[in-house]
Length: 304
Ligand code: 13P
Image 1 (cartoon, rainbow, N blue to C red):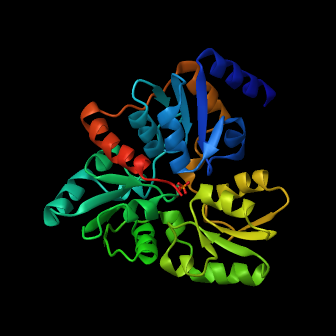
Image 2: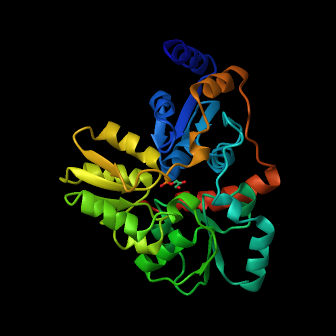
């Protein structure tokens, strides 16, 4: 273990590389990363980093976004097969057809989508800024929201803006039920419930707060409560426990809350990627240029 850490550190220095990791990545990957965070935070960082090499420990759409936002940088995804079940639920041709049916609509696309789908969109959003992105749009505009219908429904509830929702879900979040939350509350009556907005409405409605993974950590920091029930991918328990060792975090249920794509990258993969500077994630320029516009419009929306 010590040897591989040493190898990664040396190679990182040699290539002036920086390691970014999403909050759902395995603990050993998060611990060796230079920056960890949610999709919004990592996109913002990728856009402004000076390092010539960015090693992205996350899933493919995240590495693609980094490559689009940091043209000229080498963006490496240590395991090229890390996909996203939700991103796979929308494709560019189907979105073009939807646009044809609603020619005046604004297309808002959640970052959990392919670069080709982002290229067909007007503006992107993450779970951390979706409400602000929708509020930034002209009030009379029809909105097509792609691809997560649960996040879309949640944003509609908060903003009062009806939207045409794409029929996609994150299979992990969508499998969590109201009964799971009710049972967890019975087992931990003192705990506050924090849910991710990719959960179904029946789950979000039972939560004390609905937040991105980065928002969860900030919420705990600002709360006096000691115990929390965490309603998202189980990997999130690790960064919360690291950042707040004085608190107790319970996953909403045992089992079934692990995203296999987020667990694919090992320390050996990371070391090999730094050794070979591969696999590099590239996005064809014709797609990247249009997708960048949608991502940059999102980054221009004020954060609160
Ligand atoms: P966050 O942006 O909240 O980290 O969510 C990323 C994600 O893929 C959730 O499934």
